[in-house]
Amino acid sequence: MKNLTCCFSLVIGLALFSGCGEKSETTPPQPAVSNAPARPAVSNAPATPAATAPATPVPPAPPAPPAAPAVPPVPAPAAAAPVAANDVALISTTDGDMVVEFWSDAAPATIANFKKLATTKFYDGTAFHRIIKTFMVQAGDPNTKDADNKAAYGTGGPGYTIPDEKNSHKHDRGVIAMANTGAPNSGGSQFYICLAPQPMLDAANYTTFGHLIKGDDVLEKIGNTPVGPSGRGEMSVPAQRVEITSIKIVPASSVK
Image (tube, rainbow, N blue to C red; front, side):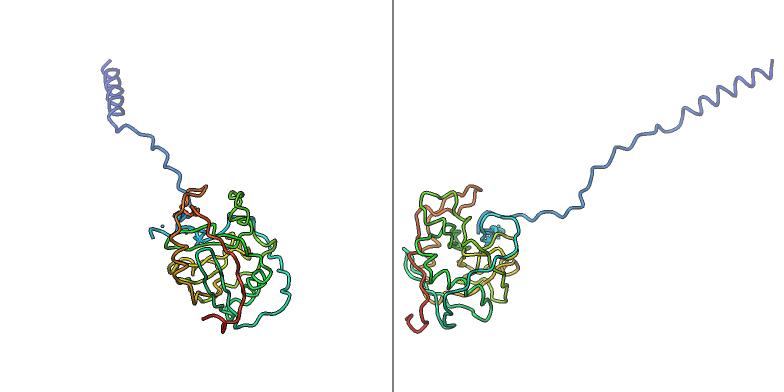
C-alpha cells in the first residue's frame, strides 16, 4: 500500500511539471519580397525629352510618339539628289523663322533623311503638337496637317524608320534631335528642339543632329505657347496652333 501511494504521488508530480513550460506560438508567415527592381518614377512633363519625359522635379518622359512594337528599321528612300554639307535648314513657322546648322560629323544618315523630307515638302503644313515649357517643343508628325484629327497627333511618320546615330553632342538649348517610340531604330520624321539642357536625354537613345544658329527668340515664343493636358495628363497640348509653313534647305551663306 505504501508503494502504491508513492507511485501515485510521482504521477501527479510529473503531470504538474509538464504543465509549467512556456506556451509554443506559431510564427506568422513573412510577407513575400519581390526581387524585381523598382520602376523609376516618370514625371509628365518636361520627355523626352520622352516624349516627352520629360520630374527635376524629375523631367518628363523623353520626347517620343506613343510606344510601338520594336521593329527593324525600314530603309528610307534615297534622296533625289545629294545636298551640300554646308547647307542649313530654314524652319519657317507662324511664330517666325529659325535656322538649324547640321552636325554632319555626327549623324549623316539622320541629316540626309531630314533634308530629303524637307526638300519634298513633307513638313510643310505640319504643327508643333507637343510643347513642354523648359523642356522641348516637338513637331514633324504628318497627322498634324489635319486640324480635326488631334487624337492622332504624335503617332505619325513617313512610313519607314531610320537607324539610330547616338553621338557625343549634348542636348543643350536649341539642339535638334530625332524623336522615337523608345524602341531602337524607330525614328522617322518627328523631331524636337530643346528649350534647356537635358542631361537625362544625353544618357538615353536619342540622335542629336544640329542646333539653332538663328531664331532663339522664336524658339522661346513657341516654348511659351499656352498648353493643356494630353490624354495621359501631360501638360503639353498647345492651346493654339503653331504651324510649320515650310522647311527649306538653303546655303549657309544665304542666311544672315
